[in-house]
Length: 272
Image (cartoon, rainbow, N blue to C red; front, side, top):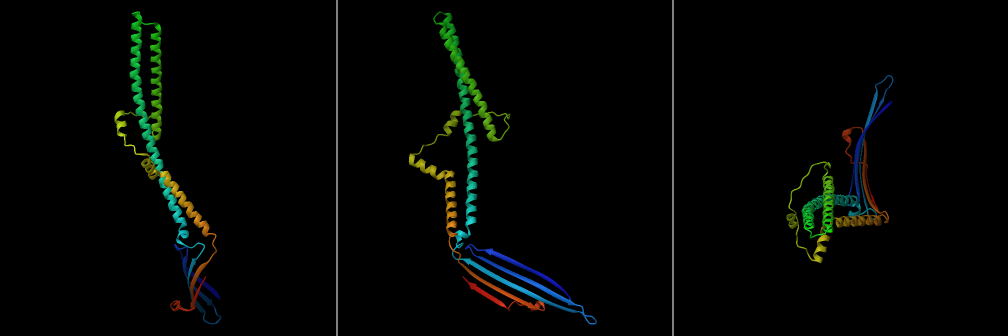
């Protein structure tokens, strides 16, 4: 006697937004038994079995409710919002850094122009002091004083040029460009300053404006909300387990597949 079995089935489960769970499963099996009889015809017996089951479970205390069931989705959504705000803040900081470097370079270029003009004036002071000394109307100390002023202004000009090189390197670094990238500037500092002039609000308006448009405060609000969700989940976890359950099952075995109508041997259960 040889027995052959073949079975196939499917199962599906779905979590409900109320914290419950529904499931359904179905399977079909075929059993074939072959018996070789000595001196007689072989015997072939086969049966088909079908199973259908449905289950339902709904927590009434621990794990119940939309807030608890959707906790993970809500917290992940808040996390995504926080990441988007952080990304915006980083982009804003880069933009502000570029603007700061730009205006810093503009101010330094203006200071270089002032120092170069002042250097010419100091050089003229030296020539005037030398002329007056040759005419006998000035003492040697006047020439020395003019030369010291000239050297101080020259040192200030050198420092301004070095500061300009450092600022250009910082700007290229922020822009993500090689430090040896050639770069030039052409702007009018007075026009740049005038374009940034704005009406200054009163103190209360300034505070309200700052509170309404600071993304750092939005991240703080998101963190507070996420903590509230975690606190509600922790409180719910202290409740006892009380579930509403129901199930339906039907099992049937027939010699032919067409005889399986799944309307016999039904079992219903329900309880808390």
